[in-house]
Length: 346
Image (cartoon, rainbow, N blue to C red; front, side, top):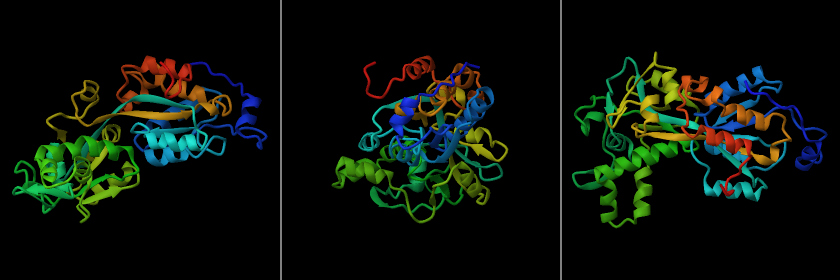
């Protein structure tokens, strides 16, 4: 493992928190439930293989983690926010308003969003975005008209799917997974069924039609899950017909309980995601406060440890858990070493 430094700048501590006698001694992380298991693995290894304390890693969702991250600078705020989506411009602005101006964006690798069900449940062998949209879109195209979603079973709109009640458990809006699910599944399904064009032809603006495409039905057949994937798994355990939306790594570590469907004919695997073949995949990130480097002991070292070849490379523990290694990992490693902040000239 890499060597680490134990020096802490008293001057930097004073700059961040003038009223505090000394900085807290551990790195604090919060955010994405998708990144949580990876960050937890790294945190445990970091504590075991360096002289720094084990970082504290919490979940809560990408949006929640970034909100906490943007609350300000100082040892009473978190150092790192995990995210399964890129930080938004409005979040960068919120950070800046609270003095969080130098943000380091670290891409740790890639993950896929999978659709999985009970091992003993109906055979949902294959999905397309149109199937998911027809199942849970708030308004769908039927007989040439945009109507409130009337579908009760999957076979009503696709005879190749089982005659099973629709019951989908999808990430809540505070999760980064929800945004990717909306953009790469619901929106595409809305376009491919012709619903989006029908909305526009009916007088909607393109922006309004796009927003309508992302609305999900509220009659109980689509349920937002605000907790982590374990809550989704519990819902599926209790519902034979349930379909859950998970990260690839969670699914791969629960294959004794879940079976996965293909999306657009492609099985979600590390190989198909790395090759760019699986259509519902996304980069994973963490965001770090440069102002906390040299103040919170081990912060930069933890970031370097996280993206090291030993932890995040193709044959690493994170890869074994399901993370798809970033082909540009060396570039990320150099960026972290140089403390390159967002918006800086490359």
